[in-house]
Amino acid sequence: VRHHGELATVELAPDELDHWIDARQAARVRHAVLSAGFRRVALDLCGFRSGSLNVLGLTRRESRGAAGGA
Image (tube, rainbow, N blue to C red; front, side):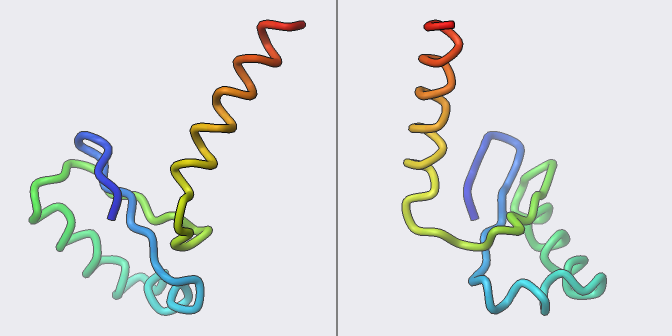
């Protein structure tokens, strides 16, 4: 789970996504995350990727640079 203020992004192993996307299982995840104090829950459909925040940060910097150079 990644903490983004009131939002929790749940990242699962790619081979577990099908199981947890099921409505009944997704409700269990939602309940657990909301019970932990978050107001919103998101399931990352790409699954867990080590270093994914590094990639996102790089993408944001690159997009700012491209916009500034145009």
